[in-house]
Length: 211
Ligand code: BEZ
Image 1 (cartoon, rainbow, N blue to C red):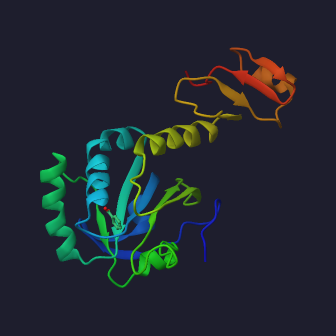
Image 2: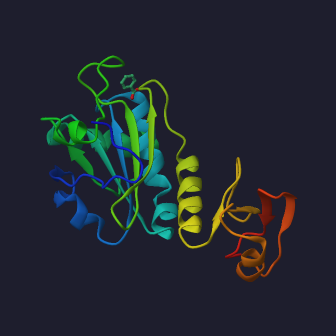
């Protein structure tokens, strides 16, 4: 069954390239990103895994743990990591789940047989410290994901979990935010001492509250 926003992120125990993990225990109080790869030793996946290794300080800075999953077995993952490191000029620094029995892929509905058989599509789940699913994203196998966009979403999720704001189209960290409609103007004056601009009664901008 499809996983929807606000659902509990299903827990599992799995073998990974960094040892056996219980997913929820491994997450601890961190935010998490679980992302799937159709197959080992494939070109797009190789670039994706290398890209995430290179920008791992950005995830760390935001308190996000990253874990990949592919339905190929451990031996295959271990050999592939050499290629990822070599071709992407990086060092893998987060675990890849070996999921040959497709336990995790099935639990997270990552196999879409009408798109590709027997492999996962490119799924992403962002999971909050409360273990609830905050974002789901599904890309076709042919299109590598934009990990800058995932960092942007993390920034938005972390901001909106603390302040009564939402973030507009193409927002980036540091830019103006939108005051959520449930907040009255009187409350907004208390909550946003930097002030706000009313374009329409339902469209009010305020500087990013934590900047
Ligand atoms: C790739 O990662 O390059 C890939 C994987 C499965 C199907 C198509 C492309």
